[in-house]
Image: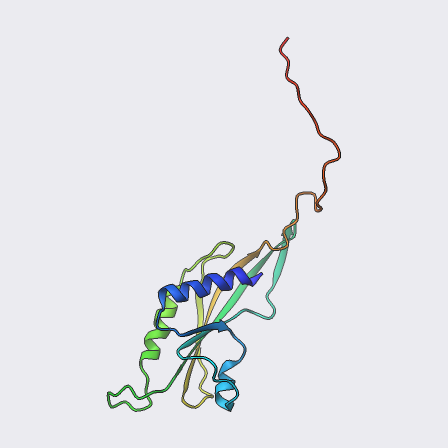
Length: 167
């Protein structure tokens, strides 16, 4: 279901935010930085998180509509000396956070509604790492389980031939 949506988001980040080095699915990577178990990616990074449990409605023929469908963007960067006298204050991360919001506000792909940034929070529980969360709420139509009309696939047992005649 989410593969096409994730791919569209990733392609938008690649095209519009070239300063981002790592784009991946969210798997609590920031905690890995904190405890030293995961440093296998370059920063800045954006990790995409889909909801674990989103309400959906079956609208027929196997098509499901998720509404709302919140998608969390984890924007992660590390603290570096900007060589401007602001040791351990990376203000560029605020520029990146704003650019992400601008590039994805009203973003839309096939099967989704327009993205709307509905919340922004800062995770301050990590040393030397900036971690911002932006939640974009949309709707998502999953047609991956679309059934043919009638609910099953079958070959028609008869063929009909129509021969027009004029009297």
